[in-house]
Image (tube, rainbow, N blue to C red):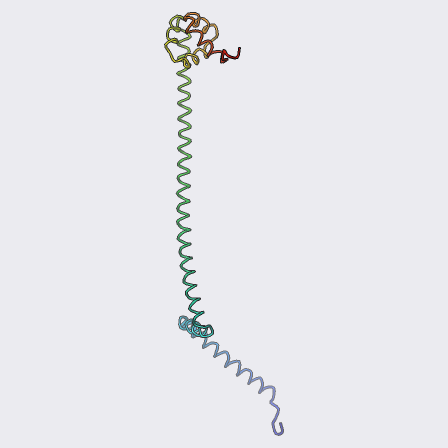
Length: 184
């Protein structure tokens, strides 16, 4: 250090500024390369990274990546199919619910009509002469005759049963009571 002078602070400052300027231009060149040729820079990065890894492992990783990408595609397709199936199920369920409501409404109308018709039939038998009603009821299915007699007033039922022969009136009376003769 004999004979060497100590650098002045202004020279140090100029030297630092000069180094900073060189560093700036070098980084600007790298950024410019990246901006103008991004594919080449990425390829260089890949090739630069590739030698760090043994070729067998690199190839195995590449194959595994391809498998994972294919699996991701399959899962995406499956999700789309599932969404479509879900939409179909929702549409069909809505159609079934609508159909069920429609059927329920029609059944209510049918029951209403059947009830009205049955009431008209009961009224017709109630207004008949007992002997004529008895003849018709004897030729009818026993269950239907019991339903009709059950809907009539008791004095009307008594007159109709009295107009029937005993062998025909007895089974109807038993059925009307709802009690089997074996319980007595």
